Structures are given as structure tokens and as C-alpha cells.
Image (cartoon, rainbow, N blue to C red; front, side):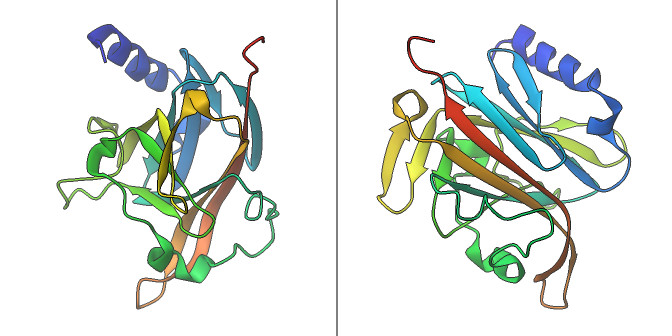
Amino acid sequence: MSLSRTSFIILYLLLAPAVFFAQQKDVSIRIVQDDEAYLLNDFETRLVLGKQGFKIQVLLSQTEGVYVFASFSDSVYRTGPADLIPGFKDLPNMAMAEEEFNKNKEMIISEEGWSYWFYDPELNWHRFNKKLVFLDSGKVVGVKSIKQLYLAGEKEEVKVKENDRTLYLFFVAVAETDNKGMPVKEFMRKKLKIEWKNDDD
């Protein structure tokens, strides 16, 4: 990434709407492609992206991370704003291993497991791209560059530019855990449906 592009992203984040930098515990998510940024709505967002790489910007405010379910199926995506999230209380045990610093620039696609994108200052690694942006009041912005999809069931890698299937993402952040570290309460859930432009569009 060139200095000018990095500067653009940081400047864009600093000038973003106040809701993106709320002082309370929060997770805000943007999808970025070709310098166009789309802030996820309060619950459901639908996007049509070009069949090329994109970025997911995640602002963690007063919280460690966010769980992500990415699938070609809408089984979890269909979960409503007040519905119980399938497997919520067992999320840590369902989290899949990913490359440190997102070396493969990929997203895991699974019908069973979740990803956990986090930042822990006591660890010397994380799941985002290596460079993080630190803001005031305990806020950090991590970026996941996505150039390919890893299909966990098939153990197969598919380039974004070669994928035609709709992508369903479900995000949830945990507010409270029990004495064993298992989730008991959430404070945020968002879902995203990504469809792809035809080559003729």
C-alpha cells in the first residue's frame, strides 16, 4: 500500500461520521472497494460489489473483537434482530484458526465455524492486516483485505474475481461472558449480503 493510499484511508476514518467513533462500547464496520466506502447499517446491509478484492474496516471501541460468520448459505443470515443466534453461547469453541496478520488476504467460508477478529494489546499478533490504526479512548481500526475466499469444507481457495456466489456475513460482538469466558450477552449484531456485478455491468 502506498503512503498516499494509507494516508487517504486514515484521513477518511478521521473524517467519518461521529457514529463511527462513538465513545461507548461499539463495533462499526465498513466495506471499501475502489475508494468507495459503505458503512453497515444498524442491522442489515445489502451491497453489490465488483468481482475484485475489497476491504473490511472494523472499528473496535472499548471491546476486544467481533465474531464473523461467512457463508454462501443464508442459514445464519436469516436470524432476526431479536432471534437467538445459533451457537451463541459456544462461540469461542466455534472460532476457526486464521493466518496471523491476514497473510493470505482471505476470508474463511464455512457452514459451521466462525471467525474471531480481535486486538489484544498483550499479544504480538492478530487477525487483521498487520498495520492497525490507533485512536483515542481505546479505539482501534483493523482492516481485513479480502482477495480470496477459503472454502473450509472443501479445503479450497477461490479468488474473489472468480466467485459468482452470494456471500452472507453475520457479525456479533459479546458484551458479557460467564466465569468460564463463554458469551452470555451481546451488544451488537449486523448482517451483510454481498452480491456481485456482472462482467457486462
